[in-house]
Amino acid sequence: MNGLIVNLKLVYYNIIHHKVFALFCVFGTMLTFVFITIVAQVADILMNNTSPAMEAERIVSIPLVLLDDNGNPRKGLTSGDIQIITTNLKKMSCHTCYQSHSMDINVNGRSTDYGVCFVDKNYWKVFQFEFVQGHSFTKSEMHTPCVIVNEYFVEKFFPDRNVINKEIEIQRRTYKIVGVVKNVSYFAQEGSASLWVPEQFNRYASTGYVFTYILFPRSLTSEMALSSTRNSFKLFAEMFGIKESATLKHIETVKESMLHKYGGDFLVLGISSILFILLIIPILNIILLNIANVTVRGSEAGLKRALGASRWNVFEFMFMENLLLVMIGTAFGIMLTFPVCHVLDKFLFSENIDGGTTVLSELSWRVIFTWVLPLSVLFSLLSGGFPIYRLVKRSIIDLLKGGAK
Image (tube, rainbow, N blue to C red; front, side):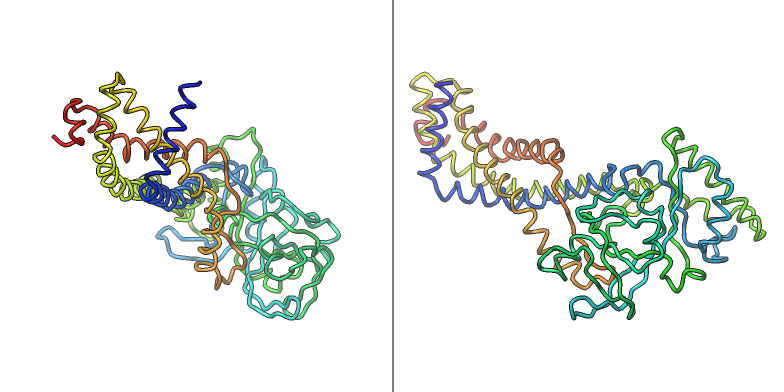
């Protein structure tokens, strides 16, 4: 323990006396790990079950359109069509159908076009949003003009944040806010929605195409749920003289749908490539800087070797300094993740007609400890460990001459 304390004091002394190198290393690492943290968090959302689709493997989605055998559209699916399809699904837990429309809204004297989701009572069972204020629609509220919003909507239109029972106007009808849900990432299922109204008030309910999701019990596997849904859909398609509808290939779980939406089989390759690029460019820069830095400190390493320190002792001391700088940069990068995300939100989603969305709604500490920190150690090994190893493997005489051969 005493040896570690002494080493840390010496590391601190070296950092203070090599401020420019230390600042460049920390700054470069910080910029790198801001974006690595964002990419890792988004990857986790896409590949794992996150709110509100906590049971993504048990939720089956049905496309908007019935296609014929050749893939040509025959008709859009309405809520009435879905009712026929789900009649043959005896083992499902529940299903939800909803429509989304861009509408004029007026909030606190501010008018804008906003995406409005018209949902049924089962929507909140299929998709498990976390309520931070109020509650989901009750049975009676499904027939009264009320609305649920997300935190982003509240931040944008209600500075005091206390919004329950406050009113907003949609298409000249006044609605009362009964609930506020926690923000979810744009990349999550239902991530683009931020304002929900009971389907009773949807003027296009009888004719508009619907988004459909069917929740199955845990006793059924994903394969059984998909097979049951496809068989039921096939019976529905036969009513229109279609034997093998091309739509059958697009009936999939929310888990599969999310993966296909963002690259399918290439998703992991794409994420790995992005992380590689984010790592390799700063690593090469810092390697060059480290080579110059350790060369300058060659005589210091040679003196330690001459006084009895082993190659490992010298490597350990110099690498500890590099690792500390990288960890400090990584910590700053993690802390800057949300500020950078807010900038990205304004740049990417400020004109988004769907409403209030965000790149990330929260940080997963599991991702920080299983993705980001191991990558940080790897970054330190590659950017600092390689130049230091090249230095300490030289002879004491070469090191005392300044590290040059």
